[in-house]
Image 1 (cartoon, one colour):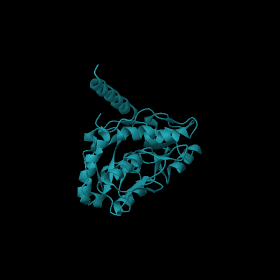
Image 2 (cartoon, rainbow, N blue to C red; image 1 turned 180 degrees about the horizontal axis):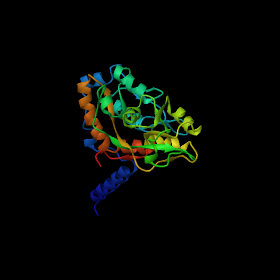
Image 3 (cartoon, rainbow, N blue to C red; image 1 turned 90 degrees about the vertical axis):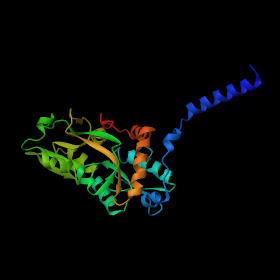
Length: 272
């Protein structure tokens, strides 16, 4: 083997090993470049204000070391980096307040269920992921199957202002709905047996079950959440860029990686 050929071989081997050690996005994954107007629309204060609420892996959860994780956290930070602006997490007690802040322009970005009611108030990209909707029960609950839920005397908890509240208010014929201001209070209601089940997406239910001994998610689902990036209305150029960015985030593994690091469960790819 000549010295020149050996050099090429070693260089190729080194490149392969470096690529295995720290894989990066392909050039196509970095194709969407924001124009000046898109940056101005998406971060009008000079920072990307990311609306989050605690307890949901799609929004924000904390690691044992106190590090913020979640699909909204990671995708939001990646978008801020693409825009070349700082990322600012703005925390609210529950998702309804995040959506209200987005609607009012007090935050610039979040990821949440793209329900028809919310789509009338904020703009969405196509879904990043879909999450099954279900019910969480604790030992001794009178609810054992989906058929047991909408029955006289049943008390079903939902988050105040949530899309689950709107959906179940339309669907229930017999069960009473009990609203919880926060997910922490929802866990406490279940723990005190003040509700028979709690309804939301299975990602949140899984987080709640981890903190409630013996709690389980009922088999089956009562619906799907179509989780997407949401922006305030009136930011057309910014939305066009974020739509491209969202497709890249799915294709290059950003969304899947963020979901895995946040412990997101109960998901499926959109349209499957």
